Image (cartoon, rainbow, N blue to C red; front, side, top):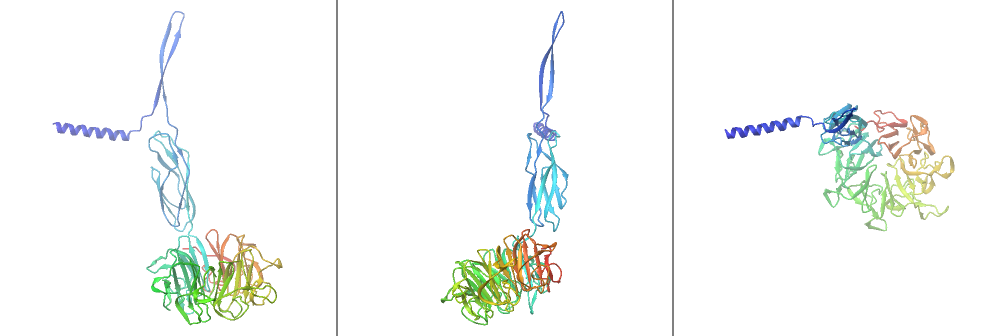
Length: 555
């Protein structure tokens, strides 16, 4: 019986505890006793009066809260900005639901929010909290920002365009067939696409390749620098421009190899430029490597060979057994010739020079880097062009000019000028950096406010410091973006398609391809204009446009 009695006691205690947990906390009270006195002519009577007052804690206060999640990514969190002077837990109540996603809100304030597929922007829901005394708070708002899957850089090639996304993946669109060589889009297929497609991971072609830091679109080849400072290339490889030790095209990214050990990746890559049949990379040690076609010396190796399918060193012309050192940046475009800005603000170019695009006052090809010159006077061209911020070279041998943006906000161009692509109000070619890009409002003055510059086949575009753009040269396919198809030998404004009397604003970077240009906007979207034969404008058409069109959803 003792054991049974002990068990009953334990069970009884447990039941009491359970009931206590389910019963609301007692309402706190305070009791005040006062004495009232009644006096008559003959007697005095004292009667005590007891007053009980209920004392509630302050009502709870709900606080606004903010959260951020990535594109197409659910977030699970808890509301943390609620104040309550009591000790009992609060109950959370939904007032208005989210409108751009699915919300599950628990009474303890935890929630799971899943944005609607494809949505980016701001979503909200509102709530109140109630305490144990049935007191309800004010209504508060939780704001959830769904980040857009926007681009952080863009590169226009000959017939295709690519962009790096904020999540270090990449999208490409346009031609996937370059003269019978396939794979420039890197999505594992041979089909063209007029909308962005994902560059795939060769280890699993159902997923996107991650870890991409920057990208360069060439003629039929695309290359990317990875966050680990190695590189991947894909597409046409007829001349070894993929740098993987073969001449076999690839529909998916392959690794650029170390020539000293072709079983390992070339490391220490800072930037890369994919051109027309050849590719160059700047290394973090301020030297450069190039690979691919070399018939006119565009690899800068001091030789003229058919090709190299592995990286070779760009040499010092004073000692071709040594690498050219002190390179600050390499041309953002190139192919039959490449250029580099040096640490001292001068420039070197090498390769094809039929039209003077090397800028050394000759038309002789060079397999080693030569110095870009400017005139001291009408006969003296011995002085290097200095104060160069960036340099850009045409991608193919059909349009051969070079331009440099200077640190003073002006620019100079040299080489072929048949369509006015030098921007100097003429169509005469130049073999040295004699020509300033002119201000169309006063062609005796240089155009100022240039932040960077990019060249197409026979046109040129510049990003301005006010985040607008100017283009000049050939406009056959609308590549100047000014709403006309007229050539211009001075800069014209890239217009806003919603109002062609105003400039397209909010441009963060610009890249010119063969006969097109693309601009990345500060909101992570992109606009392209010009030639669209294979869908390289990315707007789900193959129609040329002389005004900027919006690149379709990144997908």
